[in-house]
Length: 158
Image 1: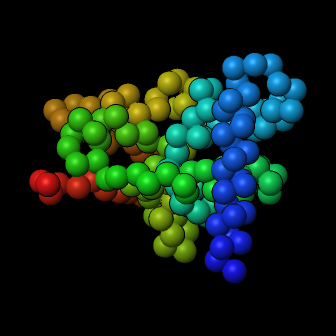
Image 2: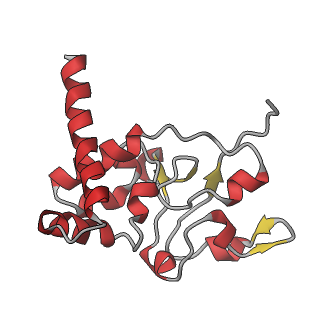
């Protein structure tokens, strides 16, 4: 059973790999997938996200089940490492990042996403308003994120 699950996940990931290769040409088959992927922002931003389950990124519900499964399999296939220093943290994507979360309903940890912020090119931690080494608190509050945002990064030296 486990082997068949791995095979199905591998097939789903292959769809994304083919999609990425099709971006160089004008392949007609990828037009529908491109439409869904670009709903989350230009430059295939959703493919840079690191959430592990559909439930962690609640905006996945806006996609048809096939694309939801394919994109989730691709994001899950990555093995992101917690940022170990400030430089790595600043280069981290904000949206769909499994290490930058907030507590949603039913005490579930959810990843962040704001189509409005993506539109204004706020994609990485380095794009945030940082004052005296801290993210401006009023900047991260508002109608988009309720409650506190949790940012995990490794402070251990290796």
